Figure 1 (cartoon, rainbow, N blue to C red):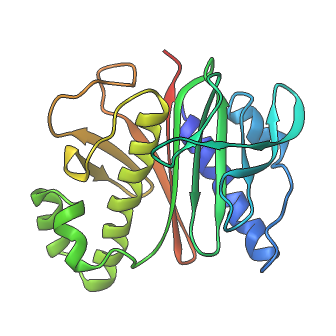
Figure 2 (cartoon, one colour):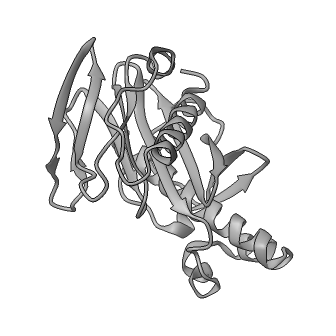
Figure 3 (cartoon, rainbow, N blue to C red):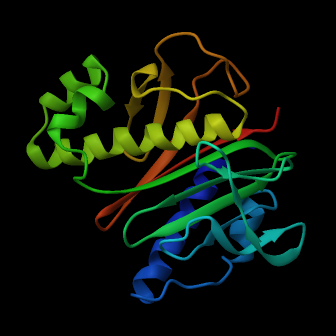
Length: 220
């Protein structure tokens, strides 16, 4: 489904706006129908801060219901076999994304506070080329770019695992990014979970002091 990741991103941005309007009390309401349609019957929903595995008001096959997710042995949420899902949270923001696997093979979302990736962490998170690019930036630009690299990789990893792939490390992929989108470049062969020959892409948005990233793989 083309631009499914962009639909995810728009929904995440809408949730962030709702959260700012309801400071201290995360809203429990479904996003507008046009967002749900953009996600092929799935929806991005708001969850309670501090309990990211309690998904509120999930739209699935036309029904509204709460869904309590079981925890897998590695502490990831265990989604039903027919559902691709992803969760993310910061200290003030929490969201989940779901879609039918018949429509999307995998989804990945991530939210990070700008500046949380300190310079000391860069060798663990960034490839040598990414570190060289960051070194040419001003401190404020570097803080934004480093957070983007971390968050975009996290969103991709979540999508990859959601689509049935194995765990990856931060140096297994590199990031090529522009004004509002990014492309993930595998650094060595591993089992693909996406269709086509082009590297997977995603979109991102800076919302206040938070960066939001989203990746979605079409159904195979």
